[in-house]
Image (tube, rainbow, N blue to C red; front, top):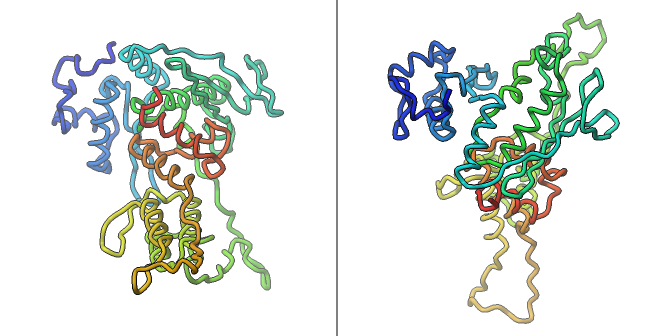
Amino acid sequence: MSTEITKAGGTLAIRPDQTNWTPDQQAVLQQSGIDNQVAPAELSAFLHLCQRTRLDPFSRQIYLIGRFDGRQQRKVYTPQTSIDGYRVIAHRAAAEAGQGLGYEDTLWCDPSGKWRDVWLADGPPAAAKVTIIRNGMRFSAVARYSEYVQTKKGGEPSGLWGKMPATMTAKCAEALALRMAFPHDLAGVYTAEEMAQADNPAPDERHLRKVQPGEGDPWANPPQPRAEGPAAVKGRSQPAQDFATAAARATDPATVKDVYKQAHSAGILGETVKTADRELLELGAYLIARGQVLAEPAPSNDDVVDAEVVETVAEGPSEADVVEHQLREAAAAAGLTNLDEEFERSFGLPIAQAGAQQMREMTRILTGSAA
């Protein structure tokens, strides 16, 4: 069946200029398992994704899967396709751009860290590595078996993960590599092989038993010490606005830089905060701007700088901080929600330890300027 959904006939055909699902299309989507818990924004994003990838949801080339989210207390729907759908999109994008597309040999890693070009052991590999070559550029990705394996209630592998662990791990690595090579075409959609682990049963958090007299509760949460000032954000789960407030109260750029590092560790630099002038900004952009303001020397009463006075202005956000913020903005624009994982798989180290050149390279990949 053709993957060109705009050429399909009938009332279910998706038009390139379509902005909403038609009643007929909505009826079929509901029959496929999408209930009334789906958010309108999720349906709109799914329509846009189908148009961009040119995969047909009514032929099960791409579909929405709902999983209950305890924080939102509802099903959250995520687009999924198969690795075959990824390959169709990648080959079509390369052909339309007049670029070559190829693969290097798949490699599997054993528990000792040794890589092999064929997996013959009965047990699963520790990881698999796939390298995509697009227009002469190499895009390598590593998938760890333990991060993607789908399990049963008792923890043993289920489905194809129990029968073909090497093949399933390699498919996950291939999906990661293809998404790096084609960020604009594949951003926002994940393969069923990657998302299988999302259906793993939650482990029992505790076994209830009666606490004996004089015995402390081993499951009780230890009391958390209170902290004051900007350092209060460290070590505790804080909303992005708390970080912005701490930066607004800071009197030197060094404090803002410390808040920036803490917000980076919490993974919330991309969240929107309200600034003192009621303007809405991303937290990372606000912290950088706040640090730059504090780094500027305060003018004297006469607006004249005394040449004999040596100003000691603390260092503001570094070049790496600015480049990292640009990288995260590019990832958000491309719909890449697991940037930290993708970056570490690609470069072998976390973003916090990477240099500006590596972050710029990833930014170019996400914006398409590296192709």
